[in-house]
Length: 210
Image 1 (cartoon, one colour):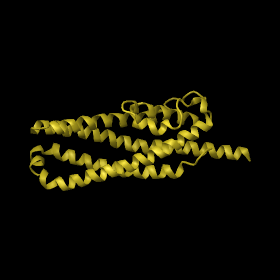
Image 2: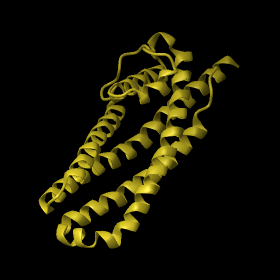
Image 3: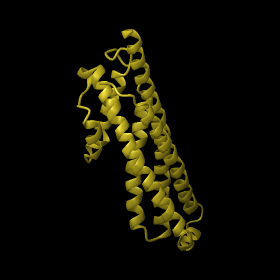
Image 4: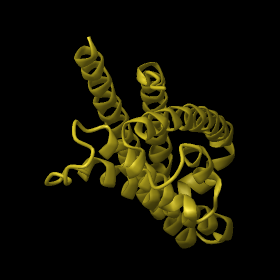
């Protein structure tokens, strides 16, 4: 049975927007460190409460976004399995479970997204158009790179004992924030586009059935 993903898409888009804003604020804190590492280190105690509050808000927003996004992702995957079950490399349940498998979560969700995208086209079995998957691939690339850089910068921060090490960690963190901000914006566009494709296809099928 087809289920409407529009409401979930709106919720996901809003939450992703909140995440983007919080990521920009996080990037600002890294830029502050890079602008004057010595002053940042000396005034950290004063700014610690604000930074901790930002970290908590970012964590809560990220958790809420993950939950709603996965629910939306599962719904569009189930719709895709109705339209083109032969094109789905995995069952809809993988649209949830794939995110929780270490390492595999770096490529399986993208594969599911591609399968859902193709199934949501007017002709699922048509060849991919020129640059048709550019939005999806750009989002996924930025997301994965951002995750890797986030883990790298976190490790560097834990090991930082000098101003040079602090600057290096902040630099990688800022680059990671840049990729995650881009991923957030592209994710909004991807969610809206795929949802629109499914809405248009479902509406067309209802009209044809009358």
